[in-house]
Each structure stands twice: as C-alpha cells, then as structure tokens.
Length: 228
Image 1 (cartoon, helix red, strand yellow):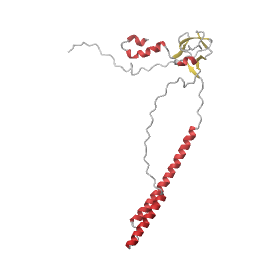
Image 2 (cartoon, one colour):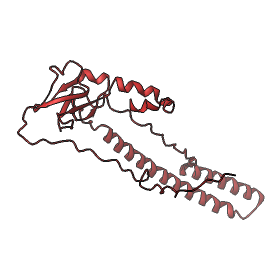
Image 3 (cartoon, helix red, strand yellow):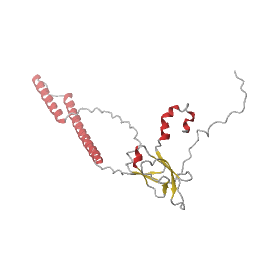
Image 4 (cartoon, one colour):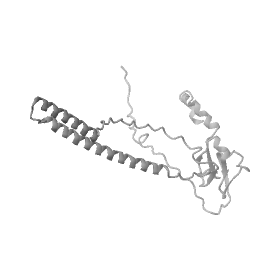
C-alpha cells in the first residue's frame, strides 16, 4: 500500500493493488518477526503452478536446393546411343569414324554421374543413421514427475494452489488452529515447539545500491542565482 501514497504518480500500478488484498505467497514469521527455516507441502506437481515458460523463437531452417542426380546407367545408355549415331553418320559420309571431343565429353559425363550417385548414397546412409539416433533418443522414457512439492519459507503460492497446501513442519506450529482448510497463505505467525534448540533463520540478501546512490555526485556549493 505504500506505493499508493503518491497515487497521482503511481496511477499505472493500479492493477497491482489487488495483490495487497489477495497475497500470492506464504511467509512464516516467529515472535521476533524473523523468518525461520521451515517447509510447506503442496499436494500437486510442481509444473501445475509453475511460471509459464518463455516463448522460444523457432530457428528458420534454410531450404537447400539439391542438384538433380543423374544415374550412371542413364548416362552410359545416352553415351552409347550418341556414339552409335555418330559412327553411323560418319560411315554414311565416308568419314574416319573419330568421335573427337564428343567422346571425351561423354566419358566425363559418365564419370561425374557415377560420383554423384556415390555421394547421394553416402548422404542417404548418413540421414538414416541420424534418424535412427533421433528415434532412439525419443524412445527414452522421461522421468516421472512427483505428485507433490516441498516449498521453503517463504514461497510463492498462487490462488488456485491454496487448496493443495498442507502444513509440513513439525517444530513450528501456527498460532491459528487449522491451517489445512485452504487458508495456508499470506503472513503466518508461528510458535516454536522447541525453544531450547537453536533456530535457523532465512538469510535475507541486502540489495546492492551501487549505481543508485553510491555514484551520485555531491550537491553544489551554496550560490546566488542572478537570473537572466
């Protein structure tokens, strides 16, 4: 409520006013208003009331254009047909029957086609091996999630989670008689059933004020403003 002392300045925070009437946490305090180390039990899986996961941007997968593979059998057949046609034409014209550069070109085409086919077979094998690895990883059964959760003092407790909260600690007892009726939330004053034993308190971290007050420049020396 202290935020709303300057209501005109904190107007955008009006929706948060409901948190002061409906607390979404549980905090146990002893007679010295310190937080003892103790636990609570939530009879629900931790994922049920957990914070929602952050959205993950899906990585855009670039589509790779693969060159069309030419089978070596097809290339050899075309080479034979072309060679026969050239020989027949040269015999009709009375030529020497030398195929020249065309034969060399056909041989290179056949060699390239064979290399492409071998590379394609290797790629297919690698892909099959990768798919088998992924399938093996997917078949691994995930660990079974517990049906309850142990919460430390203090902890976040949502409105829907209140019905699942149960008192777990045996040393500290609430001054309120019944805490398992869906009202185990907010600030709770507890009694120590073993006051002779040393208490373990929750250590609070001091906020670092460097950059807020520590590095501020000193105020200027007194001066007289003459104006324009």
